[in-house]
Amino acid sequence: MFDLIIIGAGPAGISAAFEAQKLGVNYLVIEKGLIADTVYKYPVGLTVFSTVNELELQENTLHPAREKPTREELLSYYVRFTLENNLNIQTEEEVLSVEKIENNHYSVKSDKGEYETKNILFAIGAMQYPRRLNVPGEDLPKVHHRFIETYPWVKKNALVVGGGNSAGEAALFLAQEGAKSTLATFRKDWEETDPKQGCIKHWVKQPLEKELGKNCLELFFLGRVLEIRENEIVLEDENGEIETLPNDVVFVLIGSDADLTMLENLGVETRKSKYGVVPVYNEETFETNVSGVYVVGHFTEARHIVGAIETPKKIIPKIAEKLLKSAAQV
Ligand SMILES: Cc1cc2nc3c(=O)[nH]c(=O)nc-3n(C[C@H](O)[C@H](O)[C@H](O)COP(=O)(O)OP(=O)(O)OC[C@H]3O[C@@H](n4cnc5c(N)ncnc54)[C@H](O)[C@@H]3O)c2cc1C
Image 1 (cartoon, protein in one colour):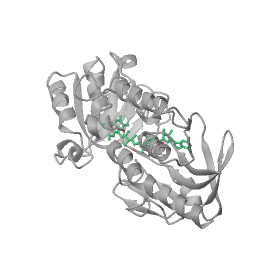
Image 2 (spheres, protein in one colour; image 1 turned 30 degrees about the vertical axis):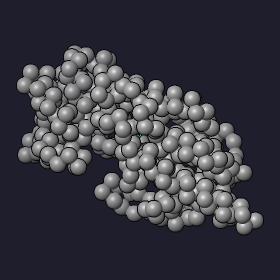
Image 3 (cartoon, rainbow, N blue to C red; image 1 turned 180 degrees about the vertical axis):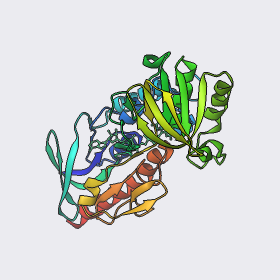
């Protein structure tokens, strides 16, 4: 019987494991992909937007070559941290269900085994379901809901749909490396200047504007995407005019959603927030309405890596304390 099973080894799960280990909590992390799988799936060569202090698990341990780390430096940092601290993480194992046996006693089934635990921490991120346009042609093999790299698309007609940083960065990478790239976005996302909104941040927008001037990149103010065809794409602009563009590849980068099914099956309440549906939890302890079931990271409202790392530092000591108290009562 574990004291704590953590589902997911992103920054949140790694931080939780490190805290649990320090406090002598008997824990296990189960990760369906690789260590820091979401970072692993960032575009190759991407420089992340957060500063070092927001990304590191322990002060003064992340040392990128430039001011901010690349995907590769950050991934290597999280992997090395896990190995050097000998964290108990099982990778390439997917948790399929969690069942409540009684209060503070859960059964966890994965595709490789079955475990029992007193507490369970969901650190599952919010990348499970990339959002779709739901238009004809979206299932064509040339349509991608993630952007990984630019080189297969050199000299090709590439269209990126989206209004956030990921879309802006993909359009920029494609244009800079020789694709004929169009960013199809909504005017309000492009013109939004409030950095708190999910718009394209100024450090992405400035180089994008430069590329626009050089004609490697086109901007299309989108009303909606109507249809994706083998060699073209049909778009409606913000004024209702229909345009058909030659097209070889489409990147739909309009966000993604968490899979809350396991939480919902346990009876965890959810609510709608500006980010989509999120679990309801106590803001101090991050415990849900189901005793012993906790949530942390990107699918809560502490979304960025800094929140994913800092929250476990607050809540794991509380879980450790609760475990000590209940052990003393037995
Ligand atoms: C291109 C890109 C750039 C970004 N840049 C930044 C940035 O500069 N700064 C920033 O703060 N944020 C950035 N983000 C967002 C950042 O990646 C997330 O905030 C961060 O990963 C959240 O950490 P997490 O541990 O909560 O979730 P994740 O890192 O998503 O980890 C969740 C883990 O859970 C695993 N998992 C899910 N379901 C199961 C299951 N059933 N069984 C087992 N394992 C499971 C997943 O495989 C995954 O590894 C960026 C995102 C993208 C896509």
